[in-house]
Each structure stands twice: as structure tokens, then as C-alpha cells.
Amino acid sequence: MHKKMLPQFAIAGLLTLGSQATIAAEQEVNAPEVVAAIEGAFGVNKGERRNHIKGVCALGEFVGNKEAAAYSRSELFSGKPIPVVGRFSLAGGNPKAPDTARSVRGMALQFQLRSGAAHQMAMLNTPMFGAASPQTFLDLMRALQPDPATGKPDPEKMKAFKASHPDSLAQSEFLAANNPPVSYANSAFWGIHTFKFVGKGDKTTLVRWRFVPQDGEKRLSDEELKTAGANFLEPALISRAQQGPVRWDMLVTIGQPGDPEDNPTLLWPVGRKEFKAGTLSISAAMPQKGGACEAINYDPLVMADGIAPTNDPVLMFRSPAYAVSFGKRLSGN
Image (cartoon, rainbow, N blue to C red; front, side, top):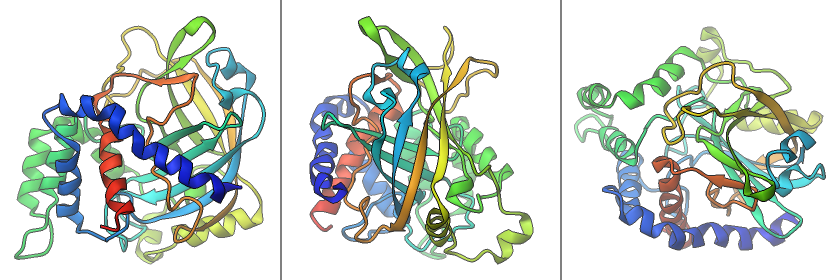
């Protein structure tokens, strides 16, 4: 069932390029130059993703709660099981990046709705993003480009980047203060952006969400960082799924007037109303090569009725950037 549906949904992600092209054109930064900068930082692996290249596929389902249905008419919250094709990954374009790296981890989900539509989410294991604008992300990729003399990024360029881009600091500090997870199954994942739940009568509610592991959050100790090895995350998830479903609770936070809408680097104040919107259950995991997730372009702006984006410039930019990268993958470049 999953594999038959994949081409349709994968193409749907690519088609969003048309709907977002105007938005991208109005910004100083364009998607092709950002993808080119990623390639400059990490190199090109033909036919593969440019970012979050190292990953593992997963299959499961999502069951929404009635409390969420009071805010959103999305089919996600019907209370019926929704098939999910997921992907867990490391940030960056290096397929050999060690799983002990102090870098971002990702959870991407494609919900295959009974109506035939798809809904997608692309989340990170940090509460915030590392850029308030596409320009900051572009400048980071340029700062990461290796020095020909050393084959590594120039420390002085990275120092200058951080000094001139304070919007990058919160995520960087979070990663420095929190060791990587022992398993994807033991990591929380945040939507990072603000979204709109659309309910009856088109009433909208500003929300943010995160997925919290029922197995509990667990991080590598400093000693484990030295001995964990470079490739433990994929086998750990596959093994854990073989023991029984791996579950995350989707927790939704309700925004209030004045809460940041369009800046994914800023957190909302503590104490906002929060509720459980549903549970994600992963029943199987497998290598991404030939797996159900390999062909999917997890564009977070592929949305079904009931959930809508805000005007967050980073969220708006992700769609055309993903499409450029996806187009290169499809062509074998």
C-alpha cells in the first residue's frame, strides 16, 4: 500500500515549487543559491538529498484526539488511524556524518489521509531553528564551506558568522548544552514554526507542536559519546521497533496575542495552554535505500485542509528549496 502511493505524494511535493516560486522570487535569497551553498559545504552525492542525507525509514500510524478536533477540522484528528511514512535523519549533506555529532536530528512524517490527500511535517530535535531568515541560513552554509588548505571549515569564518548573526545562537547553544540522543526513539522533535489550526467557520488558532517520546528522552553521557560509534542510530531504531511500537505523543501549544508568529528562533513563553493532540506509533524501521521514505520530498508546506502555514519566511522558503533539491535527486544529479 505504501509503495503504490509514494510516487503521487513525492510528485506533489515537487509541484509546490510552482505555488511558492513567487514567494521565493520576492526574497533576496533564492532557492537555487541556497542549495548550491549546501553543495559547496558538503559536496554532492548524486541522486541523494542535499541536506539531512543520512537517515532511516519508518512505517506506522497516527491517531488524533478529539480535543484537537475542537481547534482543527484536519482529518488527522478524526480519531481514526492514519498511515504514516516517516524518516529520521541527521542534518547536513555528509552521508558519513557520525551519529555522535552535535548537530540537529530530524523527524519527517507523511500522513496518508483517507481522502487521498497527503499531509507532511518536517521537525527537528531542537525547540528552535538556527535562522530567522533564509539569508542567515545561506550565510551559515557559506561559512561552512571547507578551506581548500585544510579540507575543513575556517574557524575564523564561523566565528565571524556567529558574531554577525545573533539569530543563530539559541539553537547553537542548545546543541552545545545537550548531548545527542541515544536513539531516535528517545528524542523529542519540535515543529519549530508557528502554524494555524483551522476549525469550523474557518476559525484559526495559532499553534506550535512537538512530539514527545513515550520511551522518555535519553541523551548520551560524555563517556558514551567517546564509545558510541559512528552509526548506532539506525540499528537502534530498527531494533527498538522490532520489540514493539515506538510511540510519541503530539503536544500542541496554543498561542496568545503577541507570541512570535514569524520567527522560528524565538520560543513562546512558558505557561501557554497545552494539550495532547494524538499519538504517533512507529511499528517498523528499515534502511532508507529502497525504503518507503526514500523517494518522498518531505515538504512541510504539503498540507491538507485544517492546518495552514503562517508567514514565517523560513517556513515559506523551505518549500522551493526542497523542490530544487528534489528535482536534482529525480534527475540523478
